[in-house]
Amino acid sequence: MNDTDLVHDRTLLKATGRPDQLSPLVRRLIAPNPSPFTFTGTCSYILGRGRVAIVDPGPESPEHLAAMLAAIEGETLDTILVTHTHRDHSPGAAALKAATGARIIGCAPHVEIKGAPSGRLDASHDMDYAPDLVMQDGDVHDGGGFTLEAIHTPGHASNHLCFAIREDNSVLCGDHVMSWSTTIVSPPDGVMREYMASLEKLGQRNEAVFYPGHGAAIPEPRRYMRALAHHRRMREQAILREIGKDPLAIPALVERIYQGLDERLKKAAALSVLAHMEDLVARKLINADGPATLEAVYHTV
Image 1 (cartoon, rainbow, N blue to C red):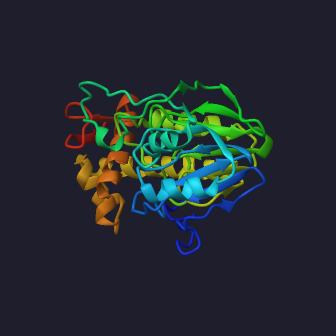
Image 2: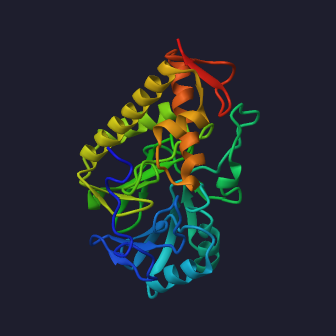
């Protein structure tokens, strides 16, 4: 699987300030925060009619806040749900709560890992996120006209939740499964072993469609997740093959494996390779000349 297999035309999937009706229960409103990491912008989802919920209200953006409020004019927002605390997903919750009085529920706040050897990109997390209720794996939210089940899916982020919509036979999958690119797994909060286990967990479900945090809806999600898992295994084999030729540090591996990659994405690629390295070292398939870091030199056992 290539990283671009499910990229959709940006002109057909972009922030317009108006919601798209995806099903009788689900509307999608794209935030105006396009970037190499967010595709055309963060997808906020409006669930239900009359009494509604919004999932992932996106970044701190007065423009997106106004669009969300306009989209639910005449309706009552009583719940804001958040899949994880990356800054393109959760900061908008506070302003939306202030404007509507809705409560915030969903993932737990981000917790810093002190002394993590590979460093931490806490700047990517919303440290001000303050939910009224933290949902655990298997918890159920009754939205009136719909029912949500929380599914804990660590890997991309340790606090990541997906939400299954029972009446819609669908899953809001946040950033754990995206339709336009493979998911970044950035240590130490991102863990490859956990990411793969969460993919398998989602792959055992039977919902007909997944709604991702970025990009278009994913039909046949079980087939797509098998392709994602295969892609990760092929990336692992490519790493082992290159290290088998020469002991290498991660920057050199990125240059060999991700040929032609946009320069803006090389840091993210290096962090995903680091996640693979941590996993391979733990499985005793490779060694490092010290802790698994971006600067370490890796070699086969």
